[in-house]
Image (cartoon, rainbow, N blue to C red; front, side, top):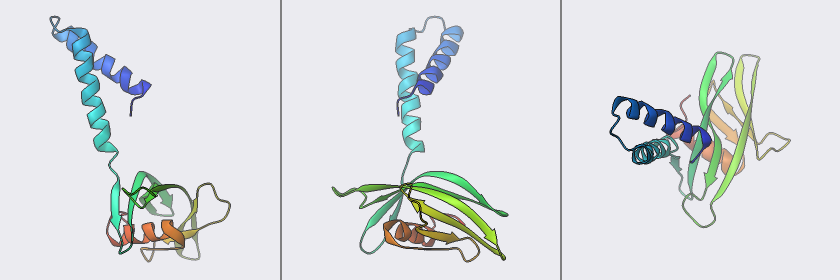
Length: 147
């Protein structure tokens, strides 16, 4: 994705090259740096694909969540019907809960007020309803989400 930060990084790298090799054309080198940084960024944003019998899901934008002594990477976005015309992206937020010897990450979808389900960190399973619940469940089962 094209961003201010990316352009600054390209200028920094181009200036270093120009200082080391004065004969280099600044504009041309800047273009090469931008192309390299953009291709590097695309590799970072690969969507983890999860398959079920009826649907393909994409897990994207992973973040670290902490719950007690557990720290896991979970997706902030789930894409249902991956690659089809009905593709839909769900935004997920998490809240940690650790009581009575249990550790869970409760999740809500699209800034909803109520929890849609949870990931049980002790049993290494996801419980919930809907497409997001299914994507998280199969994401854990297929190893896309490491607990």
